[in-house]
Every structure is written in structure tokens, then in C-alpha cells.
Length: 170
Image (cartoon, rainbow, N blue to C red; front, side):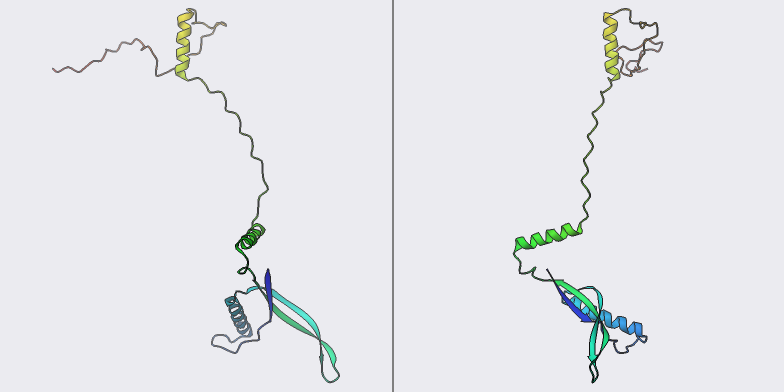
């Protein structure tokens, strides 16, 4: 709940050092008024102008008069509220000021693809097939079978390189 206070615009302040023009004097008076109200927890909301009919003179002739006011507000009653009411009020304020995104359904995760067999598993399968079926060298359509290189081959290839052994002293 808020409490409001209206004050007339301040008149021009007296001439002061460094404030010789009318706008400088007016802004100084305005800032003093705002600072004074802020000390009492009043928040500046805005300015309004109202036109009133005022009777003046002997005959009471009415003439329009414009009144310009400054509007201040402050919250009241929060200190006297019980704790649960205070928390509810603060949650309301938080929900009013927060921008909430529309809920979006999360996309369903894609299933994992079937894993490829490792090269070791492929070479082990080919050895088993070679042992059971002797004619594996040619595919049924006559093409060469696909060979996968594996650095972890089970059988070393025959080569012309000398066998290495422990070093010998001369």
C-alpha cells in the first residue's frame, strides 16, 4: 500500500554563487526539494498541473489559475505487517517486476546410434571366420574382401628385418 504527497513546485531560490540564470536557480531549488523528501523515504513519481477557478477582486470574478505539483509516494504499513504478509507482498512485487519466458517443451533426445564395432573386434571375427571357413579370400561376388588395418594385430607379419634381442658387450 502506498501513501502519496503532493507539493507545489518550489519557487526560485535566491541568487547564489555560480547560479546566476533562472534555469540554474530553479534546478537548484528543485534538487533541494527532492533531496529533502528522499530523506523521509518519499520517492518522486512525477509532476501534474491542475487548473482551478479562483474568485478574486471585490466582485468575486472567477479566473482560471494553474497549479503545478510534484507527486511523491512511499510504502506504508510494511513494518506493521506480520512476517508472512510481508513475504507475500514481496513475492507479489517480485512477480510484477520479473519478465517470465513462456514455458517451452524440451525436445526429446535422439536415440543413440548403434556403435560401430572396434577394429580389434573385426579382426577377431575375421580370424574366427578364417579358421572355420577356409575359402574366405574371395567375396561371393568375386571382389576382394575389405581389410581393416589394426596396429594391434595378433600375428606379426614376416619381414626381412633381423630379430632384436638383448644388447651384447664387445
